[in-house]
Image 1 (cartoon, helix red, strand yellow):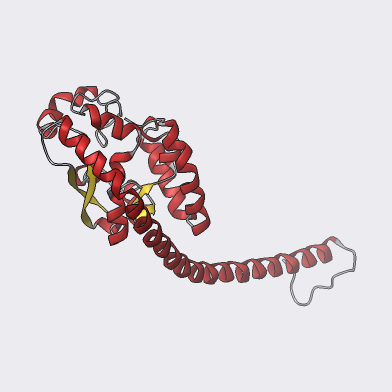
Image 2 (tube, one colour):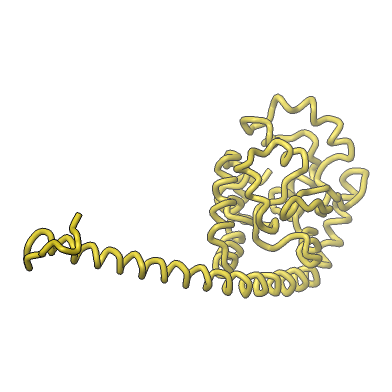
Length: 247
């Protein structure tokens, strides 16, 4: 350590150390200034991004609901002819920050599906006890199997998007029973508005294990932007066509 009274010979090791230290301090200062600028920019772009995201949700959901209205009528008729029960199925889901809301779907299961779930738990394809999914679930109706393969059963959620319960892009909304089994780490996926499609929906859907779904959801939350949403929406189309992991 050099004192103020120590003499430094130009070109010596001590002089080099002092110069290196000065540049290190300057670099650290510059890095801190850049970090502050990025944080300010993130806050501004975050607020602007949220506004643009909501505008995109409203325009796209309203447009699709209008265009798809005739198809909804055909789907409703097919469901009624295939099995007894209501056409639409409301289910309580957990949204941003734990907010509960009714998520709408076209009914794809028999009306007594929940009563038979306990007897099928041993066939759950997911390890652990958070998610329940079967490749060939006997509770699904004939029409329902087609609706799921084509992701048509999710289209009523455009109404949830229009209302503001959901977004076009975001982590899929979980069931309250699933959230009750979440770890502290898993709970962070509730930091964003839930969506109709998300990163893991275009990366394998139900083929992905739950920890990988969480990882992709958190990756989206930490890097979300309007550009990323548009990219995910564009990639959703071929994912739906391929029907990979849809059952």
